[in-house]
Structures are given as structure tokens and as C-alpha cells.
Amino acid sequence: MSIQSVNDELNPSLKSWNQHINLLENLAEASILVNKQGIIEFANNAIKELLGYEANGLIGRNVSCLIPMNYVKDHNSRVESFFKNASKRRMGAGSSRPIYAKHFNGKTKHVDISLSPIKIEGEDKIIAIIIDAKRTSGTNSKYQKKIDLYYSLIEHNTDHLFQIDREFKILYINHVSPGLSKEEVLGSSLINLLPNEETKFMVSNVLNDVFTKGLADSYEIDFPSPLGSLHYSTTVTPVIHEGEVIRLNLITRNVTDEYNRKNQLIEWKNFIEKVDLNSQNGIYIYNIKTGTNSYLNKMYTSILGYNLDEVNSFSQAEFMDLFHPNDKEAIAKHMEDVINSKEGETFKIEYRFKAKNGEWIWCRSKDSGFEYDENGKLVSFIGSFIDITDLKDIELQLIHKNKEINDFVYKATHDIKSPINNMVQMIELSLEDNEPDKEDLEILEHSIHRLKKLVYSLLEYGKSDRMEDVEEIDINKLLDEVLIDINSEIEHSSAEIYYENLPIINASKIGLYRVFQNLLTNAIKFMNKGQKPRITIRCKSQLQHWIFEITDNGIGIPIEKREHIFDAFKKFHSSRKYEGSGLGLANCKKIINLHDGDIWVENNPESEGSIFYFSIKKTL
Image 1 (cartoon, rainbow, N blue to C red):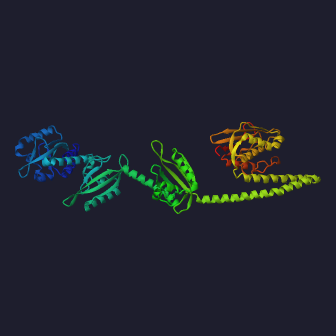
Image 2 (image 1 turned 45 degrees about the vertical axis):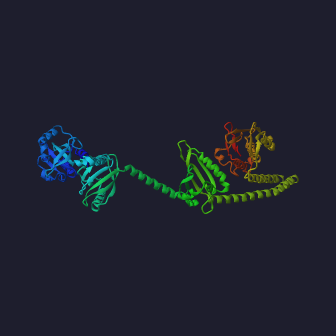
Image 3 (image 1 turned 180 degrees about the horizontal axis):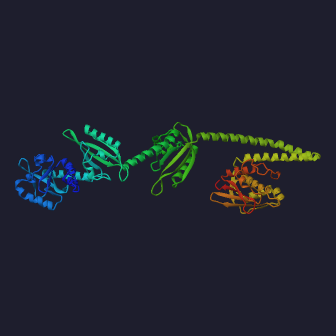
């Protein structure tokens, strides 16, 4: 310990004699305590090594006994002068006036002295620290500077540096924790400062172990303070003299922030591991700049068989070859969309990927931006996918079964047409020749005609599953043809139908013809009694779709029935006046869906009627 660091420890505010004695006894430097009369009241054992005197032999003697004879005459006046203007001072230490002390053998010794005034139990005293001047002169001056630097670093170190004896009493500490003071810490037991019995037991075991084995050790504790709970990590190293551990040096560091961050990282790691363990999705993070994946989860490897190193070992061309040839174009377009995406956008795609075992796996992926640079450009994206191979197999089976059913229904209804037509002809002949049974035959004829319409409706419904050729259609001309075909219904009801300046669009002519025919026929059929049907057809252009609206003044559709009006075989009027197959609007919905559009109905606010809307995508 340097003279300066000792001076700093000798705080004039300390009133306890024992506090100073505990400190001075353990100093490596020779130290004495002198009163105003110049009498030595205390000397530590280091005085013998430096000047040859026994410490106890100096107590009670005048300090002049340590002064060479030629300096004694002026010394008493200097002591008196010091007390009149008491302040910390150093004598010698490279000054032009060297200082000498008298050795026990009568010789003089070149020394440096540091004086510190203090009050002990109300009385003024001087503490003098005496060191060999050789430590600070000549060839040793550089070494002393290093020592001073070393102690300066200790004093200003943010870590707590302290030393304890075999009774665990604190002999030195550079600074203390919040809520404590040096006065109460110096000379006290380290164990008594610990927060609880468990900690005291643990620390005691560590300290005793270092004293016994002479090997460094460490411990960590939580310590309550006015600033909240603090976490300290302490390294314990032995101070060994002549093969015996005489003291311990402790370095305690406040690692609260690191400890909390470590715990947070552990908690986050456990959370990620649990999510990973229970995830049914394969997850990946792909860095666009490096062209590699920075992360794959366990489910990715479980589904596809590849681990992170294997995936990153592929070249870009080799990795693209793992996608099914029929899906590569869609994948390239998907990747372009993701790379050019803005934060918050997501993109979905289905594709086939060759697993490590050589099988094709159907995947459904969802990708979005993960990291962006300061210019908002995508750096990496994150994606997740599920294995839908089983779903695709079921989907293909359902498509096959539906095709078989549709083909069967179409063939069956087509074969039924011929006998029904024969029955109609026979009934018509019988009506001409059978006047008595005419009423019964008319009922039978009506039923046969209903059956015929149902068969034709089934045939039309089956055809609606197939998209006819898309071509350029002038809607005005198409409606002209529809009105010619439903002319008898128009004349019978005196219906008025208005349209003009409708667009030319790309669509299936046959499909759109069926939609307009069905919607116009319904608008005429479901008219109000005693009122002429008035029907208006308009079209609006939107960004991606054409929106058609057909407004009528008919009987309208109750709100509770609109949800199911486009379902097959749903009829909402049982009266023979509104007879039908229940397939017309279902046909319309299937045709519009094939045009990437939608169909719906709302109330006509100007009458009791309805407004039917349907959309047609512009880029078919």
C-alpha cells in the first residue's frame, strides 16, 4: 500500500482508537502514532524491519529517539509547528532536503515520511508513515511510480477490493456498497455484512477452503441495497507469507446487469426451445445478402431431412433444382415478391420440394420480411411451412371422385332426356283424342315438363364446372341475344329492360350468357302482382374487376334467406307460380367463381325489389 493510499484511509473523522490501530497494525510500512507532546503512543511491527526497534520498546518514548543527533535540536519546535497548522504532508520523496532517521544500531537511514493529523477521542495526534527512501530514489523511482499507479488504480477501481484476516475481519476496502460506509465496514466481520444465513454459510465455507488449501476460489451472492437487489461476483485469492496463508484478497464486482441479461437470455432460450419443440411448422430465416440460411428449426429438418449445414452447402442452382419443375416459375415469382416486399407484407405459396429421402413433399409456405437495412431494403426474410402432402393426396382423390360423380350425373340426366321427350309426345297425342281424361292428362303433362326442366338444369349445372374458352365479348350484343331467347317471358309480363354503353370484356361467352339469362328470367318471374317488371343493367370499372349490377322492382329477398340463395336446390317459394329447379343461382355462382369473381344480392332501396351484383376479373 502506498503512503498516499494510507493517508486517504486515515480519515480525521474516525474517532475510534481501535479502528486506527487495526489499520496501522496490518500496514507493511513502518508506522508510529505521536501526541502533541511528541510522545510515541503506538508503533507497528514494521518499524523493526526498517529501523531495528521493537514496537513495544518505542511506546512512551519521545519521537526524538528516532532522530539523528544533529537534527534533534530543531525537531521539537517542528512538532509544535505542525500541530499549529496541521495538514497532510510528505517529507523527502525526491525533494531537495533529504530526511534521515536513526537506526537502532546508531546509524542513520535515508527515509521518506508522510504525516497525517487526526483526532482520537478528542485529542490531536500525528500518524507518521516511514518508508525506506531507496524505494523512491535512483533506479527504484520507476518501480515506485508503477507501485503508485497500481494503488491509484485500486483506489479508483469500480470493483470492491478488500482484504480480510483469518477471523474474516476487513482490514482494507477501497469503497463500499450503497447504504454502507467505510467507517462501519473497516474492522468489521465480512460474514456479518452478508444478507442471510444461507449466504453466510456458503461464503464462510469458500473463505475457509481458500485459507486451508491456499487455492483461489469464487462465489456469487445477491445483496439487497437502496438501489434494489444487486448481484455480486467475488474472486478470493490467498496472501501467502513463508508458505502460510495469512490473509485473503477479495475482488467483488457488481454484475447485476450482466446477471439479469444472462437470466433473460436463458429464459428466452428456454422459450425458443419450447416453441421449437412444439412447433408443427418448419421455420427458416434466409439472408439475401449472404445467400444462406441463418436459422432452421427442428421441424424443418424433420419434414425435409436437411440440417442447416446441408442446406447452406447447396449452390443457388442446386437448391432451385429441389423444387418441382412445374413449380419453379411460381417459386421465382414468389421470391421476387418477397424480396421487393415492404415491412408487414406476407406472401403465401404451395409447392413441391424434394426431401432428402428423394420423396416430393407438398409444402404450404408463408414468408415475410425479417430484417431491413437503413434504406428500408430487405436484408433477410423469415418463413414457415407445413407438410400438406396428405391433404393434397386427399384433394386429388376428391377431385377424381367428384369428376366420376359429375360424369355419372351428366350421363344419367342425358340418357333420361330421350324417354321424357317420348312421354311428352304421347301425352300431347292423348290430349287430342281423350277429352274425358283431359284434366288428368294435363296434370301429368305439367309434371313431365317439370321433370324435363329439372333434367336440363342438371345438365347445365354439370357444365358449369368447366370454364369455357375466354374471348372478347361486347356485353351489349350479348344481352341483345339473351333478350331474343327470353322474348316470350318479356312479352307475357310486359317487362321493361334497360342497358346501354356496357363494356367489352374478356370472359366465357357461354358462361356469361347463362348468368344474364338466369338473373333476367328470375327478375321477370318474381315480379309484384299488378306491376310491370322494370330491370336495369349497369357496369362499373374497378382496378381489378368489372362489377355488374342488375336492379329489379320485384318481390325482393328476405335478409335471413340471402346467405343460402346461391346454394343448389334451395327454393324459397313453394307456390306453383314460382316453380323452378333450385339450380339457377347455384349455376350462376359456379360460373362467376370460374371468372375469379363473386356474386351477391342486396335490397333495392327505391323499391321492394333486389339488386344482384357479380364481378368478373379483368385479367382472365
